[in-house]
Length: 55
Image (tube, rainbow, N blue to C red; front, side, top):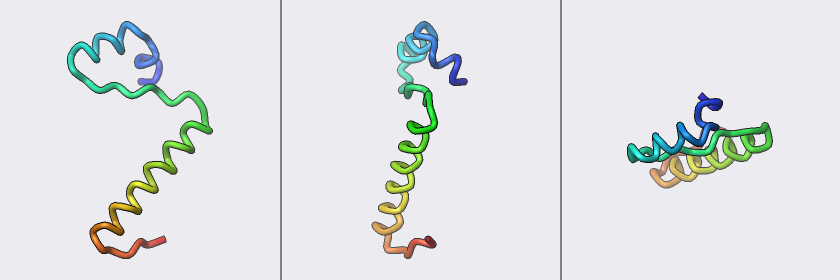
């Protein structure tokens, strides 16, 4: 999937169809940042609805 999304012609076709295509993750540091961002987002969501976090 990452190989396909890394090709500009495939990305352009998907974007023309109206799809929101994220850039592929290229290294572990970027993957770690994305994971932390998603984790922070989920923790905020849990706090917003008033549930205690498990961790």
